[in-house]
Amino acid sequence: MELRGKQKSYLKSQAHHLQPIFQVGKGGLSEQLIHQIGEALEKRELIKINLLQNTEENAQDVAVTLEQELNCQVVQIIGRVLVVFKPSSQEKNQKISVAVKKV
Image 1 (cartoon, rainbow, N blue to C red):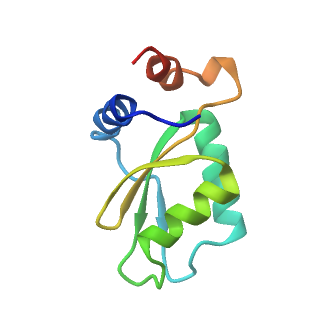
Image 2: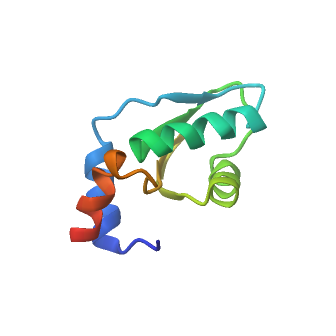
């Protein structure tokens, strides 16, 4: 699902109050962390990921890796914080994606 400008704006507004639930530290972006992010996206659809000061990872590189591995979309990158969106495959978890389709 390719997002349009208004849809991205809506997602940014929804993510504004969210706290980052994942932190990428000096261990980098491991397979286990990618798997956990995928599970969280399945339940929440919209999450924030924080890159800590001690990580060697670059925000752009992390965004590309996540988009390739999880088939999600990085909506926004602000400094070391990424906002990631992926529509849930389970209907009971589809709250944000239903609203995005209406925008």
